[in-house]
Image 1: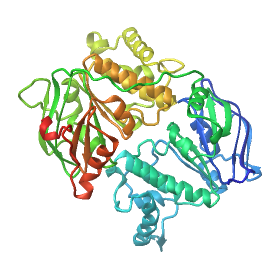
Image 2 (image 1 turned 60 degrees about the horizontal axis):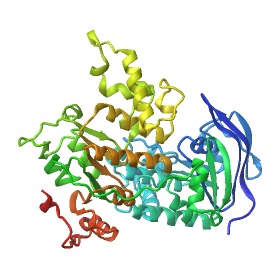
Image 3 (image 1 turned 30 degrees about the horizontal axis):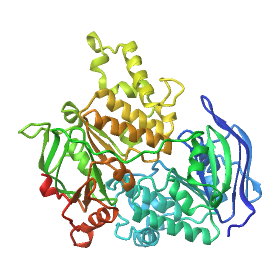
Image 4 (image 1 turned 180 degrees about the vertical axis):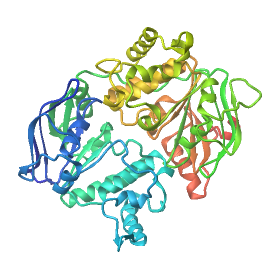
Length: 518
């Protein structure tokens, strides 16, 4: 059982930017407990964790840590006190190796030369318990997918001893197997007396691993209770201040004509002879383990990465399209909502208005190419309202928005373009339960309007609820494709593992294989 004495005490903490972000927050974390912190996007969770970790200075209030005043002005100061933060947004250096990123502050060396054998041995000792034993410590981080980079970020946080480890949305980009490895390490740290502040929108995880739950809403601490004394429905109600309607499974609908067909697409070494098609009015899901090639496939389709082989047909065309760049893909009616919204989906220093009008400049420009500001403002305002973007004004910098509202800006930007084929890659990563339902409803509405939707997600429940068909990738190939009504979680996971075990996904009579579909 956790020690009842507080390790961290926060009193009357306050922070404001253009508006209050934290208001008189009282909060504590006990020794040896897993304390969950939940709330909608913009509730103040990340700001609170950044203040505790020395990345942001508060405007009011005080903190004590292990009985002493705690007012770190830098991340390094907080780490010296025993506080470490693993952030939701990746903080890795892409041109360094996995091992160098994990031990950046204490690289083993002799006479100024890095001892790489010792460094790699230390890295493997951290990677193995997280299920990353097959990942070479000398591989450059820039060559990894978002999910693997997230695991490296977590490994770096677990590599150092600390009294309080803050994990901000650690499982947002992970599949079930990686989550299990992480939970095993959390259990180990807790048994050793380390306290964990666990921030997540995945409430089932909260219920499973936490000892206590604290709920932030609009910058104020609403409740703090033992996990065993609070239900998931009550947590949701406390987070959003209202009851949320339940999202039912998607009703089957007759698909329209083929909107996109991919044949024999390959990009070494991660995409291997991939073929599929998606029809108008259909939601085609893509499942698979981390590193299975889902994101790389979508980037090749969109022209962001040149494929080595394969053909892409748009609409009912009999000749393959030339999609050598995202610009050409957009001109053909394709949209890609990237999994890395901050690095690839948004211009963070720019305003909401500028981001929302970026893809529609010809429509809002006059003679000589000058932007018509009134038209730009009207269009941006219309889409911001349609998606429910919470902001102070359209001139607010996108960098100041919560993750959920940033994701809504990305979606709104593409909807303003009115593309026929929309590829959503991890659209609800790091998104709270209310915003997630908004995005689910939007995706189904788009399909009902006749758009073709490709949904890549690490959340299998998300795919099962939304999709008409699910294609499962394994080791760079499509292992199986299932129609709604013919799938089960076990079948999908068997297919996802098949490429790594040397076997084939079990096929039933009601299962549609890729060969049959194409």
